[in-house]
Length: 155
Image (cartoon, helix red, strand yellow):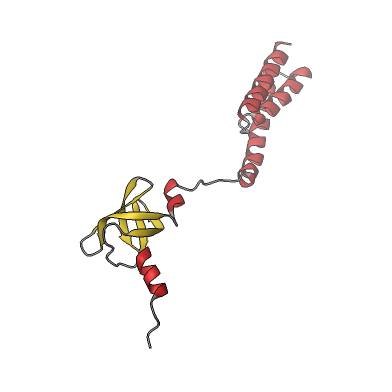
């Protein structure tokens, strides 16, 4: 009779833990405890009960865990820096590839800045952020883009 109480308590504890976490971390143990409870109800010895608990829990874990991993959608949040792509920044230190200089400020944060096309970009120029590589902003000079679009066609 006391094994019925033991397996009933294990079952209830596992179900409560599962309900609290909602992460499918203890459901296998609840089913294993139900199997051991059934074995105890029919008079099986503790060794068999425990064997059923371990076997059922492990089999369910092995059988369902890979399936759950496939079904679980992995959300990879965009890094904060990735949200800056397409924004504008202001060059606060001349971007000069040969000298290895360049800094730009975006949303109050200073970044290392590198010209997308390798050109020199003067201080106080407004640039567009085209990508982020680690702690570097890859930028495009807006003024050159605007000038190129409005330049008269060569004859």
